[in-house]
Length: 152
Ligand code: FES
Image (cartoon, rainbow, N blue to C red):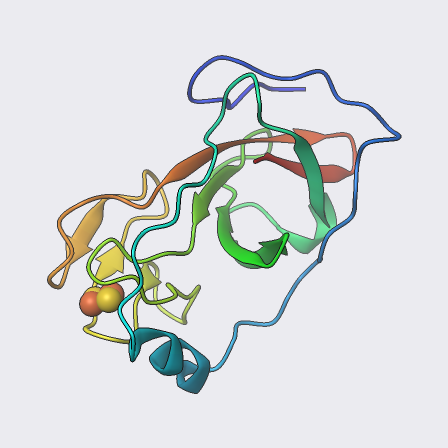
């Protein structure tokens, strides 16, 4: 098991507390994202990696081959995953830092916001195109056996 926790804090995994939330969720349509964008949302307070974060099994490792991206849902919120190597996985909140639209996995290499075409790097969540300046919010994540776990 490899620790990809950005804060270096990894809560202990408990088999009984794990929940398979949603695996391999198809990317929501642009219409849904645009609907979400019609009323710009304030970024919501989401607990980041730390002592209060809980592990959520969000996908099987086989759903996220090396170099691929995936959209998952945890407690009604969307997250974006990227697996840069066999042993690492990165997780970001799918909330655009421009005006709060839902960021999508998309067909391109970068994560994409359909509202004003901001793009975010899967490698670090940085805003690399469009009007967004700030990176996507990152969460601790890891591969644990056959599971992809995100700490939220
Ligand atoms: S809300 Fe994402 S680019 Fe404007």
